[in-house]
Amino acid sequence: MRARDGELGAAVARAQDGDETAFAVAYRIVQPGLLGYLRGLVGEEAEDVAADAWLEIARDLGRFRGDGAGFRGWTATIARHRALDLLRRQRIRPRSTTLEQDVLDLPGPHSTHEQALESLSTERALELVRALPRDQAEAVLLRVVVGLDGPAVARVLGKRPGAVRTAAYRGLKRLARQLGAAGTADAGVTDDGPRTLGESE
Amino acid sequence: MGERHSGDGLPGRRHAHPGGVLEGPEDADGDAGFEAAVAAVLRPGGVDRTAEERAVAAFRAARDSGALRTRTRRRDDWRPGRRAALPPRITLSVVLASLTLGGVAFAAVGSDGPQKHADGGERRAARPAVSAPRQPDTESAPTTPGARPSRPGHPATARDTLAHCRAYERVGGRGTALDATAWQRLVTAAGGEDEVAAYCAARTTPTHGPGTGSTGGEGKTGESGNNGNSGNSNTGNAGSTGNAGNTGEAGKAGGSGRAGGGAAGKK
Image (cartoon, rainbow over all chains, first blue to last red; front, top):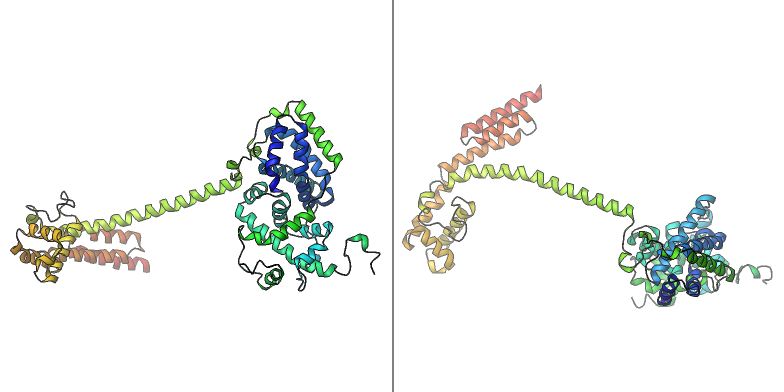
């Protein structure tokens, strides 16, 4: 995703000159990461929040200064503010229950990440990410899914780069551990997601 | 390092060393495959056409209303040089921290100053007693012309002379073994090569023997009485008066001051 930052920067520059095709190009480059981040933050509301964020992005595009990587950070900040507004309004708790957390923390001794990831559905992955503490989940999502570098993640979150780096590291580590557990737990039950649940065996 | 990155060993090692070395960003490429896999799962594959059209329509409307010529705010500036800009709350805490540390440094300087001053005052009271008899001798030829000739009573000069004399004693009068410059200075100060032994004898003896130097020592005794009294503010001042006076009696006065302080403490 970072590989397209040059293309993104050029598209943004042309869009700022009024080129709506270039704006569509920028949208297609940025939207998947933004939506993935928002899903981790607000779950099913992600599409609506992203739509709101894009209205603001379109309105304020003339104000933006920076390159492609900067545009990712800028749009992520806008999307985050929208998501936090929603969370405040709905008082959604991004964390799952403690009981579930404990089950997820159990290590899986015989599975590898590769095996776990093969059977991992988007829903399951989101569930795991959203079970992380908020700061870890956001740091992981911004870095891995949106594709921001450390300083940019820190700026989006309004934290120090060191704290963000630690949060991302811990989040990824925990995620890897939980994926091991999830991989073995799901092995005989949901191989390919909910669709196969009724027809297995 | 290399074996840690091998695919099958990674999960086991993670479990075996949960509190292991914290990986830095440069080390994180060992998890690049894992991160990419997570990203692939969490990033939606395609883009919803309807949502894209809504966004483009919003852009068109904003452009046509002249919104593209709006002013850039600080939060809209993501140019690489500005990205390190700290959020206001952190900036404030950095400023507060520097003020606090600066205050500590200032307080340290402030508390150090009077202490040194008192010390210097004691030294100044003692030094003239040491250097007083030497002064007439050194008038004609300063011991260290290169150093500070305008301050003949400076401690460094006296110390230099003493050091030269001790070195002279140690080599047993074989002057050529001494450092040439120092030796020349010593000869010049003594007024001739033959005079060095006598000159040094005159320098080294009075400092340790009885005389004015011992008066300085008694002054110190008065000061130690002052230190003992530091708990009681008033009597402590009396003790310091004793210190300022350079005679043994003044030191005694400091001692009596301490006795008074003890009585006051009892009461």
